[in-house]
Image 1 (cartoon, one colour):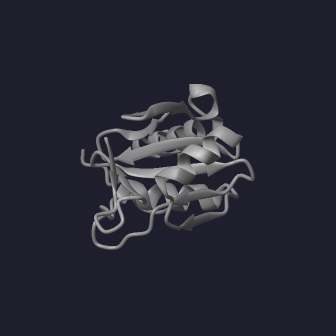
Image 2 (image 1 turned 135 degrees about the horizontal axis):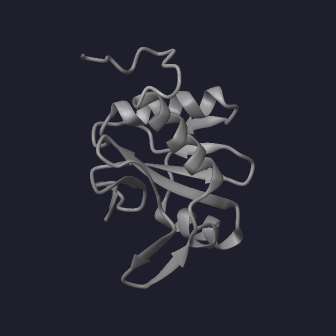
Image 3 (image 1 turned 180 degrees about the vertical axis):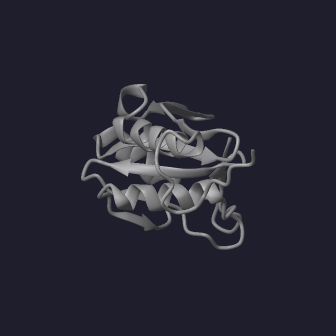
Length: 139
């Protein structure tokens, strides 16, 4: 379920209880800014950090539902994913709403989405170095 802002009801806030990220054809990644209604999750922060480290321009900016739909139709928007503690990173291949539906990037999980997911999971499971001190092992 997509939650829109409470004032104008046009800007994307979250998906269920998860943060949402939009990946564009120029490699940039956009996520809605924190403003009191969006969860400032640790997974969100980790994705922002990891994406920047691998060379993506990452920014926090409002994304309207209309722009989401138009950018998906034009091909400018290549991937969308949600993230959260339990789901880690979940690709979003399409959106259904009362007036219709649309696909993002052909409906398949995107390369950027899956690479960021793998990078984060590898750190969580100890298969990759944790240079940020995100994981504390208890033996």
